[in-house]
Image 1 (cartoon, rainbow, N blue to C red):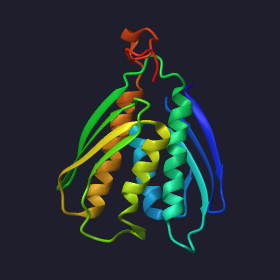
Image 2: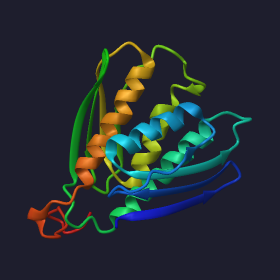
Image 3: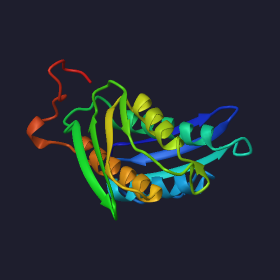
Length: 195
C-alpha cells in the first residue's frame, strides 16, 4: 500500500495528515476552515484517495497558516507515498465542469515544483476563507510534492463552482498521474532514471 502519515507542528499549526493513494476507508477532515474541509473532501472522493486530516491552527489570526500548512502536508504525503515513483504514469490531466464553471488541471510528477495558476474569483471570500488562499494551498502542495501543475479556468462566474471544479480536476489529474502503469514494469518514468 502506498501510504503515509505526516505530522507538522509549528507555532502556527499542529497537523496530522494520513493518505493512502490506493483507496481505503476515508477519515475525518477537520482543519477548522469549513471551505477547505469541503474542498479536501471533494479531492479525496474524486481522486479515490483515503485521506484523514486533523489540524489545529491559529485561526484567531486568519486561515492563511492553516491552509498553507495543510497544502504542505498533503504535498509531503504524496511525496512520501510515491517513494521512488517506480511504475507510475507520471502525467495526469482532467477538465471538470461544475455547472457554468469549467477548470482544467494538468500535472507532471516531475520532481520540479511549479504552479501555473489561472483561476479568477470575483469575490474576496469563499465561505469564510480568503479566496486568495486557493492559490497559496496549490503553491504549497506543488512545492512539497515536487509536481508541476497547470490550472486553467476555461469558464465560470460562481466562485464556489470554480473552486470546486479546480479541486475535482486536481483530484482526477493526480489519480491518473499516480496510477501504476503495468507497461513500465516498475521502471522510473524518466530518461534520467530518477524523479
